[in-house]
Length: 265
Image (cartoon, rainbow, N blue to C red; front, side, top):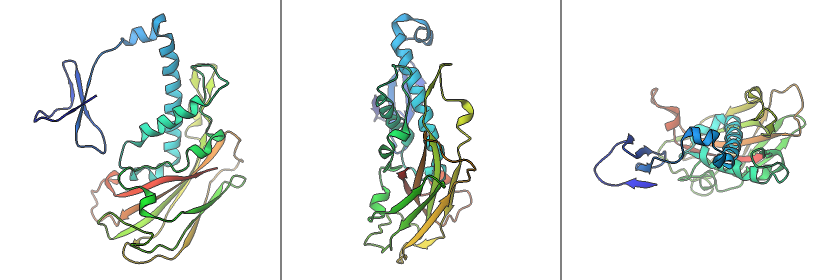
């Protein structure tokens, strides 16, 4: 990978080069084209292991997409392409499967829930830097509910707002993630298992960024008639969104803020 620094600015393909941009950077990235053809990867015996790794990468990508779905209400508060980091984390979970063979290893979030806790959607201003006091929580798997406690916030003491907006509000989400396992028909889980998982979220009222805020608690409840299975994990995420949004054409993904996965139970 190379970074384009001179006055020649372009994106796309040219000759043997591809040029593209990445969120969180104003630079243009260059990489060379090449490698085996798609037909070679799909059919050649020399690439049999490559096909196994491609299969597993598909499983990790699917698991990451399910986690992103579970935190949909706060995911617009990101300031970098966190999806790649989430896929890398799922690949790590996949390597922890010591039972299945290469090409069929699963992503058992339910067995390693603690590894998702504390996953930040930001690099420049993380939630831990904005609220410098631990948030406490409780997850009840039997009822599909979660409660999060926010301490008293004092601007300049345990609340540090780095953005210029005058107000902020909290966004809290609760979602369910299913373990991603390999099936006999050469696929990871069934296609209909992704949208079937329920989510819940809430938005607090707007608060002045210059005024203290009393401690408060919020409770979310999943709308699930059936109990959670052992291969399902509850993901609690928390974010701060700046505002209020004064411009109707403001794109949601451009709204300042920060978020992270608080707990997984």
